[in-house]
Image (cartoon, rainbow, N blue to C red; front, side):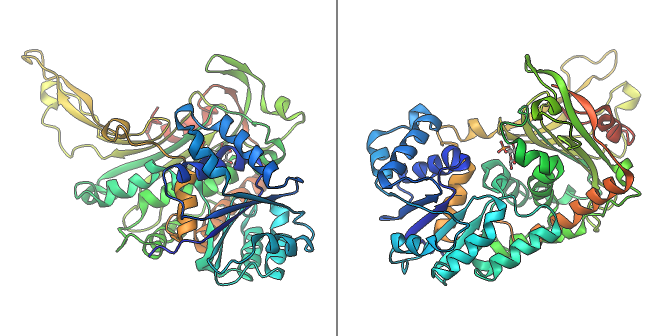
Amino acid sequence: TRDPVAKLLLFGATGDLSQRMLLPSLYGLHADGLLPDGLTITGTARHEHDDAGFRDFAKHALDQFLPDDRKDETAIEGFLARLHYQPLDASNVDGFAALAEKLGDISGGLAIFLSTAPWLFGPTITGLKSAGLAGPKVRISLEKPLGKDLKSSQEINDLVAAAFPEERTYRIDHYLGKETVQNILALRFGNAMFEPVWNARGIDNVQITIAETVGLEGRAGYYDEVGALRDMVQNHVLQLVALIAMEPPARFDGTSIRDEKVKVLRSLRMIGPEEVNTHTVTGQYDAGAVKGEIVRGYDEELGKESDTETFVAVKAHVDNWRWQGVPFYLRTGKRMTDRHSEISIQFKPVPHSIFADRGGQLQPNTLVIRLQPEEYVRLLVMAKEPGLDRDGVRLREVPLDLSLTTAFAGTRRRIAYERLLLDLIEGDPTLFVRRDEVEAQWTWVDAIRDGWKANGTKPKGYASGSWGPNASVALTERDGVTWNE
Ligand code: BG6
């Protein structure tokens, strides 16, 4: 049951995320007639804008970040008319009364989107509570980083929980807003053919790669404190693991799906000080060429020496019946050869090859789920090369291809935040991360970081434009497995 709010309040409204993602996404929903009639959007930040100033700011953001074919003058006008603004120094509780006054009557429901610096979480929650902006009609959405380890994330969660109960707390992992990520559920549970082999009997190993070509992108202050494990694995990569490894939920709803995901996250085998050096690889990019462009190394880009990892590869295990003995190879990095996110499921070989005596070579099947930039599902199967086979049977791997772009041509690809913002406005928590999931994720990630610390593990250099340090290749090759590229 959908329960739309009448007002939306954006903290950090003049920030980078707001310009690039939130305002364009809200515009997209408005232009398609998906926002509730009369929904107002109030922005707040330290900038001293008035309503008109914020509308100018938003117009500029749309000019810059909307694709040309989405720019419609009338729709833009209509969207800007929904916008309001109230300047606020969130570190000072006094300003919240004026914010509440600006918002006026919130009896029709209020959704709050918090994308602010982590140290402002506390004062913001306190301010909201003191100004009566945390009552039963209010839901809140939190953007990362939600802490830097289990302890700090629990502190934030406790703080939020003191004002907003879990069912009104919407934690964002923007990967869950991606159409292709949601499609994992459709593929697994909308088809009967995969599930019977989706386990240790049918699957040899699972690989998940989130490769990026960008470097620090002007986020040095944040990134250098965090590193790849916490920036990408703790959230996005582990959510993908959960969706791939979860048991079939009974229903498509927030409780059923998240109950199954959290079981997977809690079943991740801990990687402690004894295992970190054999089960993880960390790297930091050196100078090199990415897609033909010469780029600087991490330390030079940062302007100081640092031990922060920009690449991490992990050999993980999900310790339950379904996945016993199946490695999940995970890797993510900046300044890699190519930008793509992909899940590759490597199936077991056939139990007996009838083609061996005729010289035919078989490859085990692979299912590739490409999340971005292309969107496809590709099953690699063996086929016979046409011919008379007098010199033996020739078999070749050929793709059974489902291109989502072609299959759903004419359907606009939405920004992940469109889906998430609409679900927030309408009150559907299914694609948001529950507290127990976040905490299970941190528990596993903290153990790895403790292991690195205990072992004095430092990232290995890798050339920008490569697939990471050589040790990452060795991580899978040792098991006779090659990263899918
Ligand atoms: C963010 C990370 O959560 O995800 C960034 O903080 C990263 O470092 C980004 O670049 C990747 O998102 P996407 O949607 O471009 O794959």
